[in-house]
Length: 117
Image (tube, rainbow, N blue to C red; front, side, top):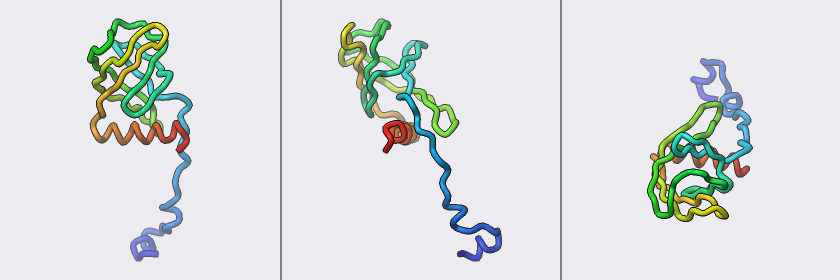
């Protein structure tokens, strides 16, 4: 036990205790043109939305938002994507560029919890 913890009355055991983290029940939400979608598949760098009723076409670049709640805080950030495939059977399949490092870390933490890792 350090002298500072002795003075403050805190022990290392109490400071090192972690709070139970909630496991999300669904993937992050995708917001395209103010329409909110829950992706059928979501991975780092790509996602699939089915059914998709927007006006995007194959190889089109677009801006969208990824939104989720992490530890009670709402996280929402803008990403740039490109449509890989778009039809009625497959839905919208898109790749996206990595977000800024701060948001990328938040997204990875959310995905780890969602997948149970």
